[in-house]
Image (cartoon, rainbow, N blue to C red; front, top):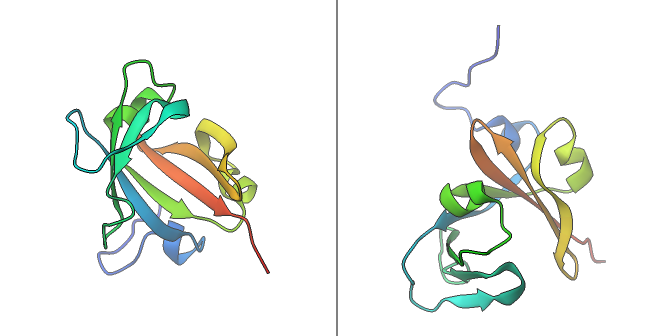
Length: 124
């Protein structure tokens, strides 16, 4: 029998695996205030740098290469210590890749929802 989490318990991703909440990405169709365009992804983002709760609004151009599920379904993002380890046994929808210096990401699928995993380069 599969274990079912109790109301008072945090999700296994946090409680057992040590993942840390990073942000929630919400796809939108209409322009939002203060959007920034990311040309290589053909998408607009806003809110991440100002939301105290970690909201990020995302709007995509029709020919964006971002996975269609990510363009239509909100995702939650977690910071992980080891991206490859975190991906082990998961259904990967976007392979691990570097998005900017010192930052690697991948997207997995869980219960029909996209989950973003982020690894930041450790600096001493």
